[in-house]
Image (cartoon, rainbow, N blue to C red; front, top):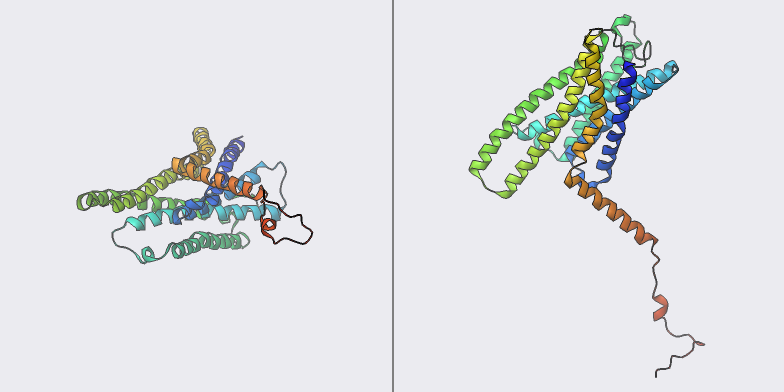
Length: 312
């Protein structure tokens, strides 16, 4: 029953994640470094969530190979969720830090390549290590259990803390530290800017960075709470208060996709851009469907046999 409620919450959330990804993908005006990182983050979350739903909703057991494949892919994408969230936090932190780092001087394309190498590469390395250890001679309690006793991690053993919850908790704590440092820096810079300059461009740029920070801060709070509850849920085990914690977790799982959609899509600027894209697409479609009248024959020279045009 508990697993069913948890999976039901994920099923409610997943479609809103995919819809958010689609909207940000088809609206070119929304493309920048932050939105690219955000799309990768949401894509990882959506795919990982979908795989967990597929694993848990089956009424019969999967073949071992299929079970292991889905489990390791889910493990990879859910790890990538935390690494991309870590990338987003780092990028905001380095924008507001006092001394500009080398990465701050790179173009957005270069930065995105480095971020992708980190956020896609490290989960891949961890997944390869986890696969190798799963099929090694390690004691069963030190193996992940993916594809063996479970299609997902064996959360009945402490190995799940070693392979998943521990690394994710470290990333969450590092994100908290970077956000705290970023928020402090924002307040200090804002006071300095207001004292030293009244330049509209500087103030607008500062306000834009600040809005991005608060947006991702709200996203981080949402996702951080979700996975902290998930970690506590794992640590609680058979604790008597488990039912209440599990109910809160299910509610957050069900709402997180809706909240992400509301934060990222249901904004005046984004809605206007969506409307513009739709209107432009409809205009192009109608233009293709409207027959064009050629006037080439009207200007051709007269041919023998044509009736002469008599002017009155």
